[in-house]
Image (cartoon, rainbow, N blue to C red; front, side, top):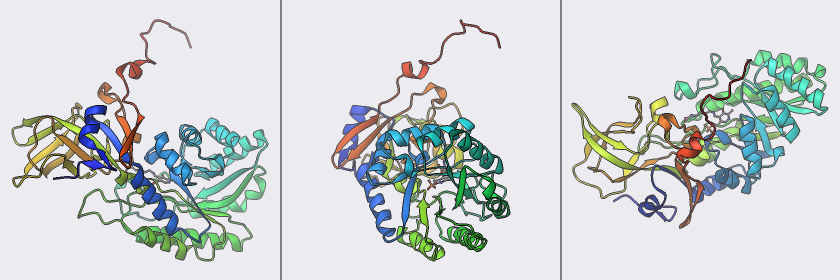
Length: 415
Ligand code: LLP
């Protein structure tokens, strides 16, 4: 029988009260990860900037704020969330290839710590806007080290064919010309090669390139005050199959590769902090016997958790009922009208019937934050469990909320 409590909260009772589908997060599990990372970083001049995109719920961001963590943002919306949750602007770094002039201006006004710059165009836009605002922007060059992260192609970012970062030669020219950038202090490096990495080799290779480049820049008379090592540490989605790297080993690689660097090390973990601390609670609507397969049709769908549809990602699925000696094979699917609305194919599970509850596991990262209202399905509720108590940290969206900004075409204008 699977454990039916999560951070001390009874999931059957929770589903009765809150309904399904429902994202549930464990505050205790997140705090454990925060503690483990903080312990591993002991003695380093390091600042963790949690990657808000992984899970941007304000209650999750508050846990990060309480730990003294900063935020890695990729939009003005994420900045607002981070600041609302109590993360000081001085601990916020701004990544992303498409920062707009308006977003850059907002971030400068807020006084964020650093821009991770990804193109020459962005570098010059940042200089112009900083000059208009009469402030100095702190910037890091995001280098693309051309390292294969060894992960799913859709979540790899560090190969030269990817849109992220710039080649080291180009970054070198930025530094060489940086004296002309009167309102910009280019004194950092940034590297992030991909996500869900389960081995240290690619991370080591990327850091080696960053470290070599740092030494070259310093030999040329430039000062590098920070190296941002990005995020990307993988987690266990498939018990008995995925073997995540130990956090201490990851930090040891950072220590070793950045040995001799006396500036600040920034880290941008997202998934590792929150993925395994979350689950998606869903109820079986019906069992359908198709021509070739047996379908478990559940009330969660790809709009609540898109990872399986988008990346063929595996998530362990555990029914809350008793185990059985005679497992069945099911395709676990949602109600959305897409063949890709599928959580698991040919998955062995105990026999299930309508009304049964299932946990889709390790959904705390890139679950709710990637949700949509496709098929006019309301955004699911989100709940934070904490040692026997729970709080609803996002109420289930109502259909009324969903359509509130829409109207019939009555007021016509010309442009
Ligand atoms: N820093 C930068 C610049 C990033 O682009 C990302 C993630 C992170 C940090 C955090 O990476 P993490 O530690 O979470 O791996 N939706 C995909 C993941 C996309 C990740 C995008 N960037 C998924 O569900 O697997």
